Image (cartoon, rainbow, N blue to C red; front, side, top):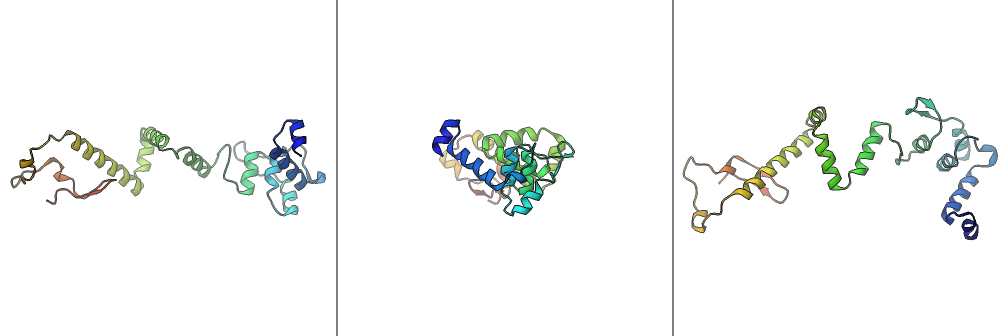
Length: 187
């Protein structure tokens, strides 16, 4: 088989895949006008009769509004999640998750989405999302405060402020930071 694959310019694994697909589709059950790739995807249906019946009934392709076989419609029929052109909300969300596994990409996408008022309004309806944004705001405030605090002489660092005098961070109670839990203002 390796020699044959080399002779026709294909990888041996590709030739094996083509042979497997062809074996799953006897000639009398192959459908003209339907690509070999669609036949290959549908070949994963284990029951022969069900597979041969299924290919005669293409599903509705919602992208164009008519029944037809494409790689994506075949993948949906057999339950594969790797859709090339996502159409449903679930498929699109799955695709976005796939692209945003990288933190840098996710941060940029989130930032750009937060520039859309309707998106922000809907996102803030989710309690967890709202809490995460609030925590991030507090974290940024704490980091900014820590960067701008003047160094204090060791003798003065141990002194408590006079009654009624508040330090800038005293108003931030129970702030949970990523690296540690901070409880300020209870001193």
